Length: 366
Ligand code: IPM
Ligand code: MN
Image 1 (cartoon, helix red, strand yellow):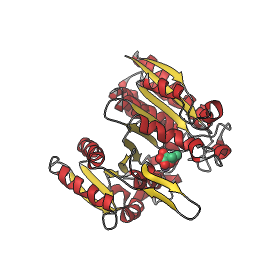
Image 2 (cartoon, helix red, strand yellow; image 1 turned 60 degrees about the vertical axis):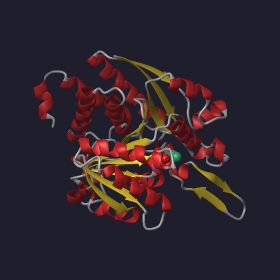
Image 3 (cartoon, protein in one colour; image 1 turned 60 degrees about the horizontal axis):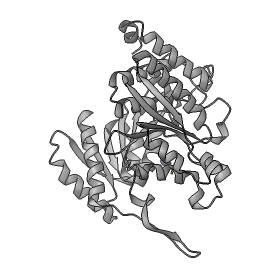
Image 4 (cartoon, protein in one colour; image 1 turned 90 degrees about the horizontal axis):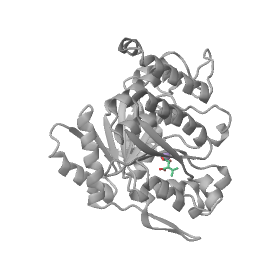
């Protein structure tokens, strides 16, 4: 198949991890006879510098003409004092809103060789295999009014029934494909928006008798994520709660540097990006962990292109590299030689090559 992929490297380590992601995508393409047509665009700080706009028309056009988007990261100290409309983050939010990418999927999976880097005890972290489904285009991030004066500031948390219904349905469908458990996280004891949220989940539940549902207050969820994270399967929640819980969940497995994400809407189009930020202190040093970007490619193959086999093979290759004790600095421990972004990417390519030799070889790596 032939697919068009827009690549928006962005700021900080974004370009480095996107280089790795594109290289891997091309290897997958050659291996399975797919053509991925890559075109680059600007977003965030780079776009502010170039177009005085964090999400310029040129980029909108590029993404509109593409089947999927791979995004690096946005932001950096250079733009920290800019006015709100000229903040790099605004570009990311505008991209999500423009394409109505209401569902943000953030999987968190324990990878055994990395658990040494986890702040949690190995026996607590080892069973983690959860998926955060974060609502991405509503709530506090987009509610009006949003303004400030010298003496006060206001943000608005608003959700319509329809907005809740579509994300909750998505979460139920995903839970059905996984372990069949859905945890809906809200603050129903305080917030009106959460009362509506819980009401909608209870209505939708009737259509999914095969999915076990639990409702959890967000403060309790924050606590249980670090005390018993293995008990979760799919977690569905509103925008801001999801932002916070996904950063919290990301440390369970050892590094933010391995967490991929997918932002999808009603159709097949999606934006795929590592959860980590631009980490400007690491930029240009070859120290960035490209795993999150590479695993985001796997999510793109799976969710937008429906290339399940290719996605699974890529995930296998990444896990195999970790199994062979190849690590970038963020997850290496004392005895490991630290690999650069590029060296680590080459290891993944090597694994992909090995896997093409025979199914047996693939087998021994699991
Ligand atoms: C994320 C980020 C963004 C968010 C920022 C950069 C606007 O933290 O993708 O989680 O809050 O959604
Ligand atoms: Mn975040």
